[in-house]
Length: 88
Image 1 (tube, one colour):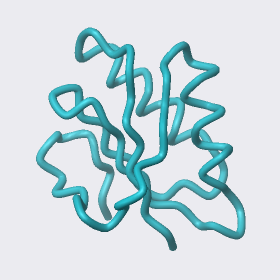
Image 2 (cartoon, one colour; image 1 turned 90 degrees about the vertical axis):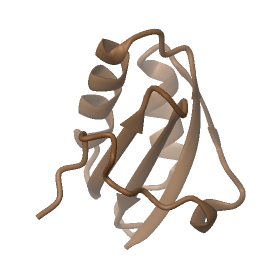
Image 3 (spheres, helix red, strand yellow; image 1 turned 120 degrees about the vertical axis):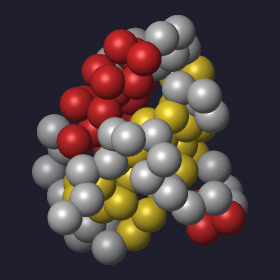
């Protein structure tokens, strides 16, 4: 599993974060998603043999948002504080 943090531009309200969560969770290979409206980001844990960062970004952009991959991916881990993570 790999974890990445995407900076998201274009989210205006919690409904945007909910919609983006659904978009990212629908991608094959995605395990957990935590979208934060307050931080304008999404932390995604995924199976890199099935999904890619490029696929994640393409889905974000297709949903009408602008996504960028952060270089320091492990610097800000998802804490689950946003309440959107689906953890087992």
